[in-house]
Length: 596
Ligand code: UDP
Ligand code: MN
Image (tube, rainbow, N blue to C red):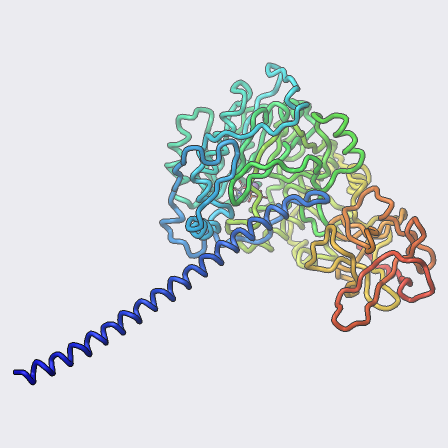
């Protein structure tokens, strides 16, 4: 007995010790996992905020404005999210959230969820679902706009057309409600929602029910995916108002938005756009976009916001409430008299899904006797997205290239050859496009040439022309003038680049008779403080480089010089204007490249 109990006691001790060890190990494991989790969480949070910051910076630049609208990357529509999540409507307004257009902030834990849901719409839907669909917004109009009196009885009526594919319920409803809340009832004839074959469950009966007692709102549904052009045409054919007003499905209009559009659209010769403000994709905050902007496009036909010409800037400052012309429209938001829309050929129905229809419409308007303008007194917020959240049947580039090919081959004349020459993927499908009826339309309407458009509507453009030299400018020591790819471009330092081939747009330049060295994206070589930089082309004497023999001289008589640093660890070879001396670094060879 005694011996046995002794053995027992010894065993107990061992078991207890073992238990302690096991407990310690489990604890340690928990501790390590917890720390790991925290680190990952912190990293997530950091990345999220980094992106937030980056996005806001890239909307508004210090030396002009470049809002990213040209998204050419198709999204994964939520990728690995479950069908239940994808089809759920989680609208649950929190009192006060987002009121007055203020941002909605999330806790670090919520940010992780929001990030996962972001891919669904390419904006923060967790935030969107918290903001009331009736939320208030700031009145961001200038004082002079607030003073304008409109004679409402004399304005034409409006049909608002909103097309959507898989939009979030709350975002779409907020677009609709903002129109209802802020449009004079006598002017608002109807709101037509066109469902472009959405797959989301909440856009079915749930949406029908939500609009059923709003009056004036009707939903047309296309069972087949048409793309935004096809969907807008469905809406336009049904519209009974005098003026068609197109909006994207993620907009919010502000007080007084409709009257300036209708007043101008009444005149029957203009496509009139509101001043588009920013709804942050991360916080849905309403932010004013820069006053001085107009729409244009790059050599690759990407839509861009640029600084307007000096004449337009003067006109704007003298007439702060008057509409001003723009070479192109962003596309999603504009008003036009219904008769003019159809007289000029509606839209090119051959354009599928998304892209290039805004340029086609802008060129057609200008070249065929109408105008495209922006009215600073109509302020509408729009969520600009970095990526397309939806699918492009057939592939993004195929769809987009086909649309670009159509627009270019019908309207751009010699500049179509320029575009096709440097974009072989688009050129490859050029002949597959049946654009005969659009070419006939152009003939029947007796539309002007693209040269007329460039010369008269956008004389500040940076495309090659008959009297502009085009090619590579090579330094005697090797290397060419160009924008280093992957750098910020605008405002960035100018360096030597690899000279590339005749098809390499990055090292090809326009040299004007005036002496401007222009690169794609409207960048001009400018002598800055101590170094040459790439800046928005404008009326700046520091952008003039006069050719004198093999040298390029500033107005002050300095010579463009390639600064070669012989130490091995320096990779950057800057350009700058220096006192002219006898050196190869100031000798430039102009290698002409045919542009068409
Ligand atoms: N849209 C559509 N069908 C499509 C693609 C787009 O109805 O196949 C709608 C989309 O829901 C939005 C509008 O067209 O309301 C413009 O598209 P998006 O906002 O993606 O273009 P962005 O403003 O980013 O250029
Ligand atoms: Mn949009």
